[in-house]
Structure formats: structure tokens, C-alpha cells
Length: 194
Image 1 (tube, rainbow, N blue to C red):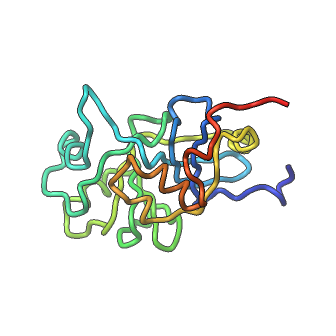
Image 2 (cartoon, rainbow, N blue to C red; image 1 turned 90 degrees about the vertical axis):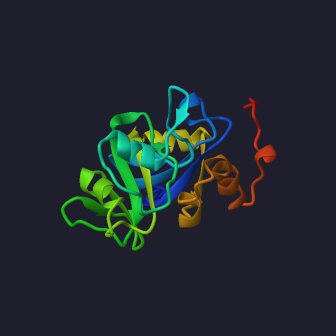
Image 3 (cartoon, one colour; image 1 turned 45 degrees about the horizontal axis):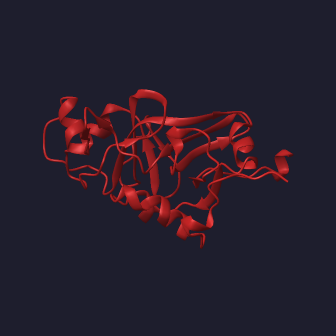
């Protein structure tokens, strides 16, 4: 695959197929924040952090790290963003919150911030209208995500912010597939050989 024919995955969704060999990504939907020749970085948007049998919401996580006050955005589930850097939080949020030094503009309406100031803003009047907190991220080295695509581990779809910020995590995989006209039962659970 040459660079001129390389698929641009930034700001797209990766939807796991039954051929996904890594159980951590079974039925995962990943929002790809960046993708270039050196690799890719994204956040799983449909898996909730569960520790000691407790599913974490945004208000729980903020309280656990000492940020007091009422959450000014929807009290969404805290996401398992991926297996990389699992002690770090990433907030995917609407563009009405932006700090030049710390926020990364992903699209005109979607930004990513991974510093404590955005977490503090979530209980203040300058909170973004929409926000999802992910712990950890999903990362790929150069050519890795392309190989996984060739192995049919992922289906690529356009990102939809309604889906990204949907608090119903269980329905996201099916809804992401439906955006392409695919029903889950259409996907083979077993690879074949000719």
C-alpha cells in the first residue's frame, strides 16, 4: 500500500469485527483521534471502566481524584479508552471548551484534552457542553492498524458525534454497524480458508 492510497483514519470510527483476535477489543468501537505514517491513536467509546464490580460514572471519577462539585455535563460512563497509558485520562469534548496550551482540535466541533484543567472545568461554569472521559487509549505503531484492516479485524465508518457522546454504551457497536447498513448477524463469527 503506498502513502497516496493509504486510508485516512483520523476522525473516523473503527468497529471491531468477529475476526478481532484481541479480546480487549471484542465488539469495540474506537474513535480515531490521529493517524499518520507513524501510527494511530484512538479511544474506545463503548466500554465502561469497572473496578471491584463497580461501573464508574464521570462524577465518581472526579470525586475519586479530589475534584468536588456537581458535574455540569451529562454524568456519562467513564470509558476504558484502551490498554495504553491506563493511569491517564483523556477527555473528548465539544469545542466550546479549549485551552491553547493543552487542548487538541480534532474537528471544528470536537476537541481532546488530557490535563487536569479540563476535569476541573467539568464542575465549573466553563464546562464543555458535551464530554466523555476515557482512561487509557488505544495505540498502533507504524503500519499496525493497516495490517489489522487487511486482516478484517476492523470496519471503518464515519464518526458521528451523536454516537460518540451517546451514554448507552451497549448499543454503540450495533448502531455503528447500522450506520453502514450492516446488521451484526451479517458478520461471520468464523474465518474461513479457501
